[in-house]
Image (cartoon, rainbow, N blue to C red; front, side):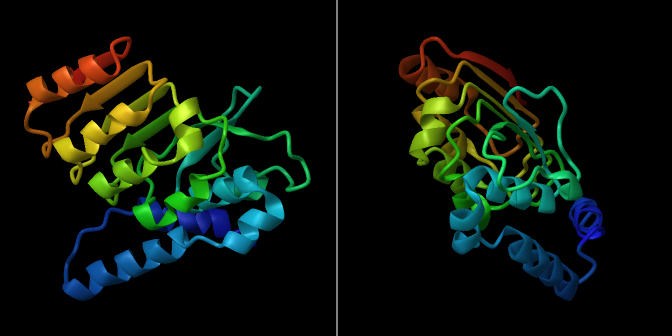
Length: 200
């Protein structure tokens, strides 16, 4: 168990250069395993603990309310009996999170910031699913999406449902084609949003 967090982070962060179909399918299978939702675990330990386990298993980091440091070591997740550890920020840089794991986030009530950077498995369906999570719609204030090659305009437009979103940074997203339309959509839906674009 002590080595699990370290090994899972190493596996998730490896560059997936598909030398063959078998290699690509292996990585997809492995990452699907890391993302599998265990609803009994969520019930037993609570949504913040279960989501922490999922995120760190996939190579992401979390920061809890009232804490300055990011947690990235699976073996240092606070005990499940300590309900005061509520996830406030998620940094999924270089992680293998994917849409099949997003149900882990359904019960999170305090997430204010999400960073999705170089997330190879994040697609439009992931952003659309996130935007359907009612508790996240209320709590999320900041979001950054950087170098996620499978994200298109459709996924970004779904973010307009985060009604309290104050800051959105979009960079290096080759699938996003119509910047002017995005600006118009967000100006209409979220007039107080600070939208920063670094797109071609």
